[in-house]
Figure 1 (cartoon, one colour):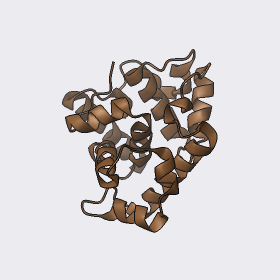
Figure 2 (cartoon, rainbow, N blue to C red; figure 1 turned 135 degrees about the horizontal axis):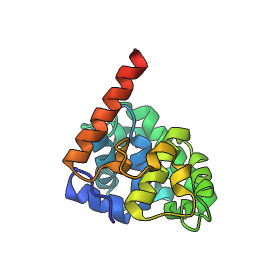
Figure 3 (cartoon, one colour; figure 1 turned 30 degrees about the vertical axis):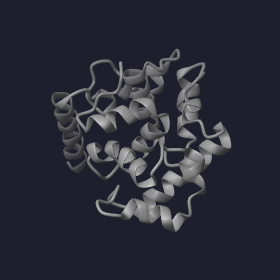
Figure 4 (tube, one colour; figure 1 turned 90 degrees about the vertical axis):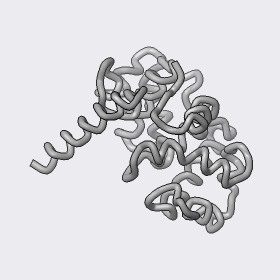
Length: 188
């Protein structure tokens, strides 16, 4: 089942054909609406003038890459820090996986191995790694044994906790309602 978020069709298509775009989108999915985070890779690709390539991004002059992120409309609320994170992610993918983002999850023998590979990437803490494992399992069929357990609560079938559970506007509303409940509970 392909990833189908309530965003531009071109952005969805890129997320489904480019593992790097999907990895960048997950990385950017913080402190901005998820629609903006998941649409950012298609805009980044347009600004670069070529397909997303981990080696190209890793080698891009940092100041120029920040400018790409910051040009209006900015790709993220914090263009400088997020541009640096995207470059760090791409450098790790080049160093550890020869620039092949799909190799991060391809061939993982277990959910724990998949989680460990994702969690070691720059910018991926425990929660973001679990969400990514859940998205890979639910949205792309990357389901090594134990993937749901490795994804924690985000891997539960029928849950509405994260982007891994969004397939349309209704599920997006349910995820947003869940997040608002969690914020309210944290404040209480």
